[in-house]
Structure formats: C-alpha cells, structure tokens
Amino acid sequence: RARRDAVENWVVLLSAAAPEEAAQVRGASLASGAKAMLLSTKDAFVLAVISAAVKMDSKAFKKVVDAKSTRFASEAEVKDVTGCVPGA
Image 1 (cartoon, helix red, strand yellow):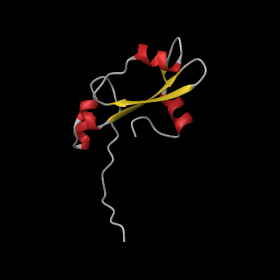
Image 2 (image 1 turned 180 degrees about the vertical axis):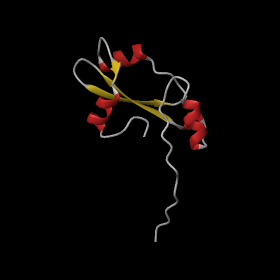
Image 3 (image 1 turned 45 degrees about the vertical axis):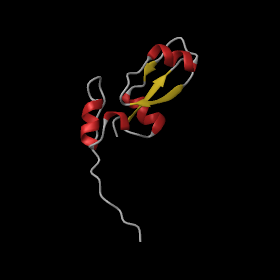
Image 4 (image 1 turned 120 degrees about the vertical axis):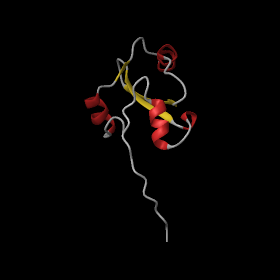
C-alpha cells in the first residue's frame, strides 16, 4: 500500500522579489526551484522554465524563440492556455 504524505500547497505569486519567499515556503534552497513563465510572441505562447536562482534574460529568450518582441501572458491568458491559475 502506498503511503501518501500531505503537503500544504502555498500559492506564491512571483514578482521580482518573491523567488526567495517561494523557496522559504518550500523549505528548500532557491537553486532547487524553477520559475515557469508563459510568454507571448507575435505567433504563439511559449512556456519558459528557468532556475529560480537566475533572472529572466529577455534578450536571450527572444533569440531562442526567434521573436522581435515578447510579453508575459496575462492572468486570463495563463488560465486559458494552461488551465492553471498563476502561482499554483
């Protein structure tokens, strides 16, 4: 029989200062976490997942996805595209 431990799920909406808070809530190091960000290009939405210990490099991201401009998806777009609530 499988054992299942209950873990309380804290929703932490990430801002420029929040990755440290999210690591503290998890009880883990900052480097052990990841940031998942849904970004929009002219043609598509792209999910970028990076280490929680680094900042998003927009210039490098635009090169990788071959886009002239990008923006973060709105809360409504995140819910519509992924089915997830931002921060969950």
